[in-house]
Length: 555
Image (cartoon, rainbow, N blue to C red):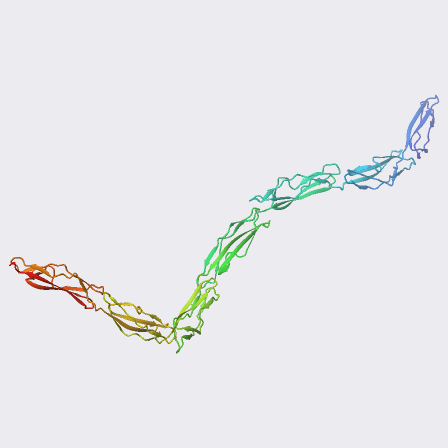
């Protein structure tokens, strides 16, 4: 209720007499809430009426009050659902009018709420139209990420030859969400993309409207099966050392290597150009390794050739040593020659004899051999001559022998007892002779010489003569018979003709033939002796004599 004050309205009438005024409410009256009509009625003496009407409105300016308005609620959607149930204690409402307000609400306790924020508003209106609200938020959170279907398995590929990438293909995955809204799908790569060598992660991301995200991740492994390629690899080198050089510096051009990945391989080597190499063969190896651990090697050999043989200092000449008395051996001493090599490493020296060794009579070669690490050899050779100064001795050297040729033979057999030879060294000398007992010897004098030579080249000789005498005269063949001729008329001589005889000799040598007359000579009347004489080299002579008779009766 409210006391309402106002000024009474004044009434007048044309009659000049104040009319009688009546009212339904007087100022200061209590009025209930709401609209109340107040009426003033003025009645003049003639019974004429006039009214003054106005409304008193008593209103409630104090709004309704909610008690226990719920706080904001936070709910999560269950798996595979797009809504969540929210429960709360409903608020109570009072009004100062004592009249229960009219309450309205757009959602009820236990309702299902969609993902997101839903504002629940309780509205209370009292009869004075005062309004009060109780509002709180139902925040339904979608905590369930999308779900991928058909997420590809890891892909394993190899690069084609001379390429650094490989194309990968797969069936793209799909994604669903409990919100029943299609999630937004993004991906890092697409089917048909080219992938570099190595492992690349392909990521598909599905995001729902609540920003829940799910990922589908798989790897594309691109294997590089091809090793790097050396485009240049040095050739083997042979370096010949000069005198007094023990090592050599080797230089080569830069190594070039490529890889199909397009990336420079890591190159390691055990030697570098400009390094110093010792005598012998050294394998130089470059190894190129790409990011896939494929490796290739470039190898070449640096051969430092030592063709310089070692050198001897103090190599001896011929050493002559006599044997002691009645000894066939001699002890010989000398200083070992010294060997050096350009490599700086002492060569290995071997020798056939050492100083202080015993040597037999004769020449013995002593050889020192120095071999360096490259197999080059140098030798120091000298001869040790152990000589016997006493010559051999012949015992029983034969006397001169005299022989005669048999008939019809040009030689004669001679026999003798061979001499014996000894030497003080105790070693049998070497004996040479050009004839042996029982040999045939030609007519004349032949010297038979036995020569004995010991190992110190001392010589002795035993010489005697074989004197073969030819006592057989030559033999004529075809000695002519006597010739009988007559002188021509009136002449005192006549010419004679015959076949000349021939002569042979047992020596086999043609004897010398002389004659007293020649074919075609003229002969005087009477008997003339014609003589052929054959004489061999031993002065044995034979005669062929015939007569030429010239008859002079025709005169």
